[in-house]
Image (cartoon, each protein chain N blue to C red):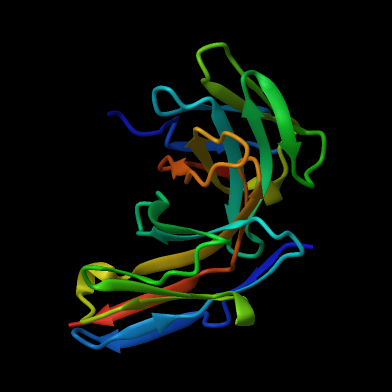
Length: 113
Length: 115
């Protein structure tokens, strides 16, 4: 069975703090894809990053960085020096079959000025 | 390049009625999938269409149906609406060639309220 767990329901930080969003996934497939999406109040899911199961290279993009570890089935997302505009709900997702995604329950990030 | 367009943005319907939602994918994308988002159940997969054929279906009752046209636009229909169908319905567009790691791009959704 495919499953994505985001244990953090809501996180509140003060602007400029670093924050890490956790994601743990379960799958029996050897080939799969992991994603992070951001959902602002407008409702649209905004794509942030994808990772293939065979590519464990971590990545930094501006203030965002990702840590993918197959050994622990985790795909964590870190925002450095958070800003108020980062406030949103963040979803981790697993895709393994065509265009079907399994989403975690989401983590609501509140960044206070 | 235009993004994924969903219409209408908001809908209010009465129990028992039916509703049709529309999704226009990004130009060149042939896969369209639909998701229901509710506070209690989160984001749940409804179905996916590729080249006018349904490739995948989630665990929803038969009242939920969809179709895709030759221009890749997709419609989703819900018949005999129930209060529990109130949700944000999101459409995702993707190239989705099997074996590829392409991402899905989402529209802003249609917020359906059933009263």
